[in-house]
Image 1 (tube, rainbow, N blue to C red):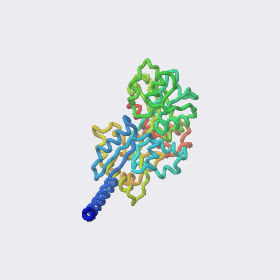
Image 2 (image 1 turned 90 degrees about the horizontal axis):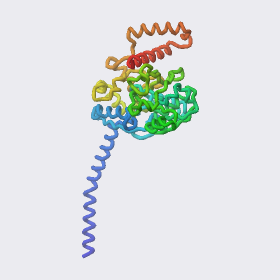
Image 3 (image 1 turned 180 degrees about the horizontal axis):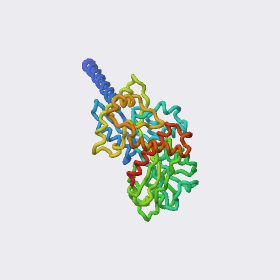
Image 4 (image 1 turned 180 degrees about the vertical axis):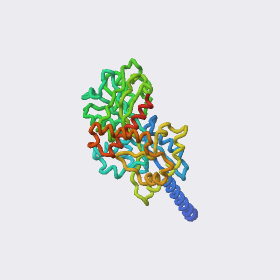
Length: 379
């Protein structure tokens, strides 16, 4: 009896196996197809920390571009510009990175990734973020921080990178620390550290807790020749920070651009086609990003703006060339042309035209225009 039952059971198991195999194979193929489609249609954007502007920009990309051309946009919380570039180079699935524009100069100086400019390109420059150098009121000149404790923020963060670049360029050796920004602000208050650096679009909400009797203020950062390649001049006013800036004396500082970076994928690869679909959808839908409720920083973006020290990704470059009428251009107005002629005359009167090429003059003039516009807005 037991043998009969065993034989019957064996036959039944065989029947079940025979019946399941075709179904399992079909299921396995369907599963593989869905995995392939999900990965082919998903573009991951690594950005910044919770509460920052970068993650808001990535979330806006998701809100506008999800399901456009069957795309899915996946925002990722990042750990700063240097780490974001590393993830763009080596972390599987990261397609786009939002970083500060000075990151390539920083990495080239560090000689970390070889010819980084060949491997990492940009899609578009985004907006500018200002450098805030906060100290007690007895510090009135950045040079007074030589040998003192200055908080740069977390290692690998954009603020840390910019702090190191700026202080090195100015020849000011300090003792850097890596406290969180809220902790650093409190340590400046108590005198445990002498100053802190924070790079963010003004007005930065971290400083809303500062009271007048805290004895803190924003220290000017000079726009020297060594900073002109990677940064723009900027001003911070009492309209931005009532307790940190004197009402009658706006503070000079520098600004760094936020950049949408991409790995230089070659044509006829899967990642190339995925990024191509993203860029073309993003550029085509760009007008929607400048409307509410999208972040107000989108209104500062000019897709056609050139970015010194970076190479435009081929797909973005080709789209802009084919759609010049649809994007803002960098051609100067008649008023700007007249101002540029006066600017050249001034350089000649100072004996500067020999030292500056025509291209360098235009770069310096464009920075002057941006600075002039920033001053006008501040006042």
